[in-house]
Length: 352
Image (tube, rainbow, N blue to C red):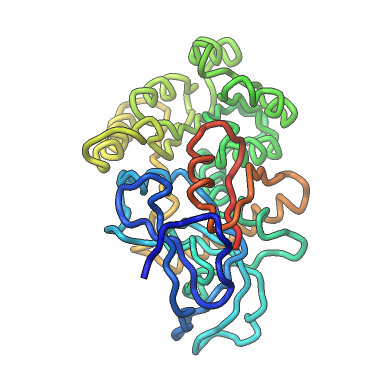
């Protein structure tokens, strides 16, 4: 049985999850209650301590995330929490451990069942909300920087949306690697970006291409673009010989009508074409889930290694999680509206 989400407290007894019933406004999300799931063979049950609102959920409620499941379903791309039950074949002493998990859907719930192999232990001393901010965003940033662009000290990169969830981690990891960062953002975020060693460019009032050409006359070594659409061509043209474009979203099409696959297919087509041309530049469309279906063990090992690197960077002080706000799970409508407002820096976190 489902009821509309409201600001009242959610019971700690039993399972409580947020359901996306269809293409609805944030207030149309629903609360569903039931029994806490049991852990099957090779599985664990995590009591959620923090989950988040990413761009994926913003697209999902519009029915525009390119591979979202059929309605109704429980959104929530990632979570952090404590293991409360273990299934057959899982070490019983894992119970009581704080872990992080990337799930794509299902994270907006009080309890989440996952395969034990998909959970990554969170080091002691990192809070649940801090860790949550680094799961999807941190893995995405690390893999784009080090596995796709293969950045090196002394290079110059452009990060579009440098104040956002992924962007704020990207700029810090790049800076820690000795890379010069040019970041696009609205003017209200520029002071914070300068404090992180970023040279800011106002995408609302400046000619982005002209300004970046002033800062890097020979072009840049990498561009990280979450916007997509027609602007992706401009990002490609900013590259120096040997440079890399990493496209990882299509934010410009969030409110469009029509096919949700078409914007991604167009991006993939451009990437294929650019890579087929006789030039020294490369382009990628980054998907954090790439390769999981064909090589699950390799995917898990890479995810574990990369998230461990991100957590270590936080412990060294190289990355400070940027939490825009923390709200109770029952206030998910308010959290979603805040994340969609374009006024916040960092990630909106949901807690029990």
